[in-house]
Image (tube, rainbow, N blue to C red; front, side, top):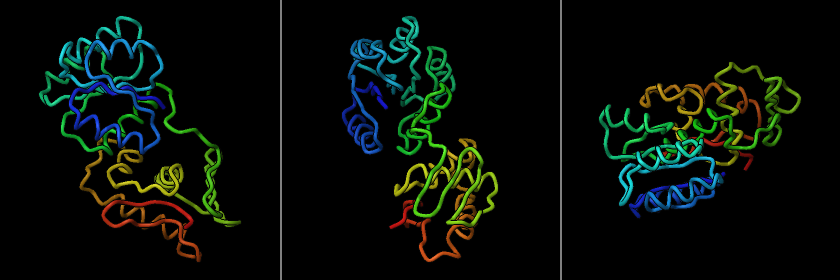
Length: 226
């Protein structure tokens, strides 16, 4: 997926660009408003990350220009301003979402994925059936099997497992899992992720020699067969 990052602060450019590339995104950078408009109107990006404070045109002007020229690409606006009025102004200019600096990279990723789902896009190729070792999840029938054994999961357990299985071997933080499975409104201090991980581990791992659900201390959780 192609992302246009419009930002003139090199520290933020390096931070966001490095993280997005590591997650499989193709990133192009515009460092001013005119360059953003030129690239944004090409129609080759799935998401635009737009800083409000730019050296020529501001982010609001860029956003209004793109929208007035028929560009419907989802726009995530970044700014150091955090008043309600600033947010309202940004959204009314045509932005789809609004994040204040500083921000956690995991939240940025989650917001990009939400924007894609809202617009009917896909952040990852959808697969009807996911498999890691002998663990199989069927997205159509909502069945989960370990070998020949059918495993009974609650809807949230199923959603948690699907979230992990779509990124095999990748460590997902608690914050990202909360945002993906429970939504933004969930309190990040809750232990609901740990509770559901324990429940899921009992069902998919406890009776098997090969353990698939791994805890990476200080980081989060992952599913892999190593």
